Length: 371
Image 1 (tube, rainbow, N blue to C red):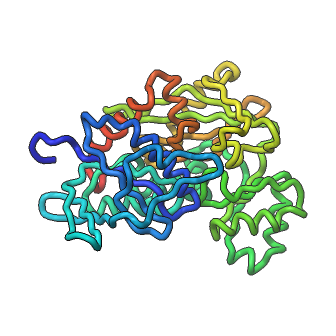
Image 2 (image 1 turned 45 degrees about the vertical axis):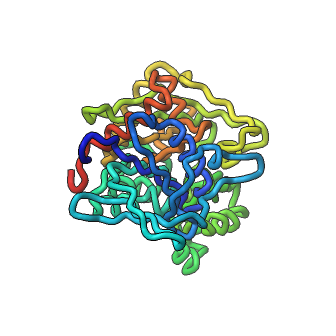
Image 3 (image 1 turned 180 degrees about the horizontal axis):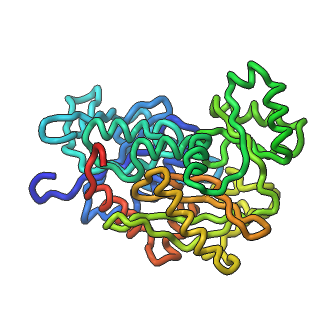
């Protein structure tokens, strides 16, 4: 930063993953919450084919409308990060006029979900450019995005997990009967999900062997690597937010329980994001004695096991006997108005604008590179 100017925050959203629209909705909420008196804000959209453009700063354009999903406008002026001697500048290029430099970027807020954004790829580019950013670093982002590797890391840290197997398009094509046998050994019902996806896109509940092939085909549409996992039958789905304090110590939020009603067998895309769908949320979750304390402790252990920074949402199953199982860890949880992470922190005394401000402050005070 130079002089007394306001720190410049580039909010980056959209992207190439199947969660493009949800990223846009999350970014709209973040853009609306950032204090413009304290920060100079630049909205940058990444189109579905990977082009960077200078987007509109109007949160309403990125809202989730009835029957319509928002997306980045690819016709807008292109944006590049130009690394120079004094820092990394934003350069806008438009065929109608000469290139324009918007100035140095102090921090990037990557509101990206899924591959090519939440998986360490963007984080690596920012590290190479010497730009600070909100959230987990390269390794933590990559490990947490890949559910199969996440399970390896969490299991090594002694955290409880549901049994699973990993299936790739190559292993399925080479020996489908072997995959079917291993699924049978796990026992039905099972969940089949893209290993590096989110927002419940491409997930199927498989009740018996006759549904396995179709569920794998659906998941393979989104990822050539798929997780087949034992269903936590009768379990409650409870989440806990982790947020670093300015001294780096992880803090935990009040937990939230999701109860899906209506015609949804599990917490699918419509239950998460369509307002008309019936999803009940309890914040704080009403848990048996000692379970909340254990959940908070396990959340911090998971956060530290993968080397997270800034924030994470840790999802749990509370089994009928009261024991806990870690479902997954999200390094950039949803920031839509319906998203659980902001709601949990609001219930814990940190409202949405204060949450966004904390994350930017954390990013501004840390260095790039090895830490």
